[in-house]
Amino acid sequence: MGTLHVNERVQKYRAELRRAGLRPFQIWVRDTRSPDFAEECRRQSRIVAQADRDDTAMQQFMDEALADVDGWTP
Image (cartoon, rainbow, N blue to C red; front, side):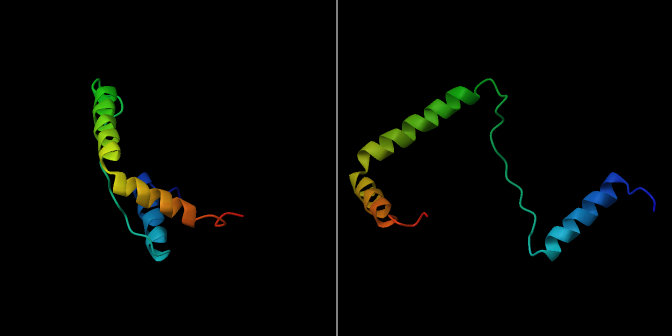
């Protein structure tokens, strides 16, 4: 039995995943090595925190939803 080249192994692996009912999905995310990564995280966190403070109806909804999951875990 011969050795498969990397491209052939990847192709075979992806074909197996497709047969299992999966499909490829690509997502782009921020580069954590970027010098401005930490500051961007802080900036976005401040925006979310302010939105949470301003949206009391959402907080009430989340509290009610949390109360509704009681007993879901073993």
